[in-house]
Image (cartoon, rainbow, N blue to C red; front, side, top):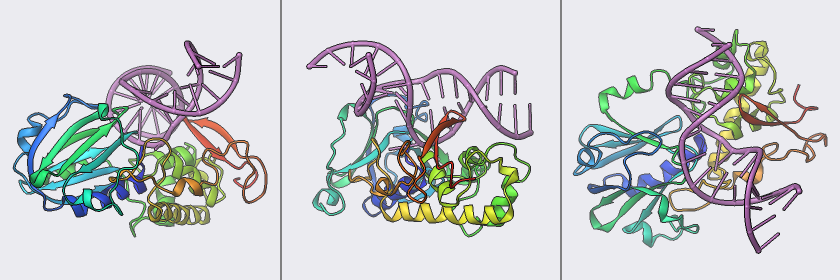
Length: 283
DNA sequence: AGGCCTCCCTGCGCGC
DNA sequence: TGCGCGCAGGGAGGCC
């Protein structure tokens, strides 16, 4: 799925077109995505205005004027697109150069002025939830720190890693510790910080956690600047591909030379996910 | 309790 | 060219 930079890219794409828009009609093409859609979903959304679109970790948060918040997680292949309204007249920001098959259009949210927001999700690993505004904190109580926040730094990472026997790569993917990093950026950040993905998190020295926290921020910010990464599924709200995939140093580069030392990049499986790293640079 | 594995789903690319 | 297999950015739940 989209990781933090991709979700934030989608948020930034949607916000100017949807903030202030009033929901006129909601159509569900099916009753469930990964999980069942919330009860009375259409009824609870219809008539409300989207006041603000926010993000927490990999979740998009549509704040509504009726004090409900619609949470959307894109899973692996979820994407939003806007049709009609101003968006259609703004080819610079919102053209759809990769029309997704409408076969996987699952949720249609129509606004006034014939504008509509469509949620498309091929693999249906995404999900949506509806919460009262004052229940939102409770929903995220087990969610880790935002890696781009000021609170996230070497000290914070050191504290999170302390005593952990799990490898650092697995630890970075634990959303309850740090929220928003996925497989690609975990690999890339460890490469940048020259730390082995196999190293037990608790064995990291203070200096290493400082370097790693800085590397995470650097990678995420750069990806954000380039509109995220596009492999197969990810496009922003206008259908435009991200560009960070051209900057990968290790992800998907198994067997190719390390850009720093020339050793061959290796790939192996950790906790069920592919890890790419340079066995020479990352110790 | 922590950490690993499996599974959910569809589509695509690669090798035979 | 055609088919089958493995794999894909996530995360919840279950098991050891």
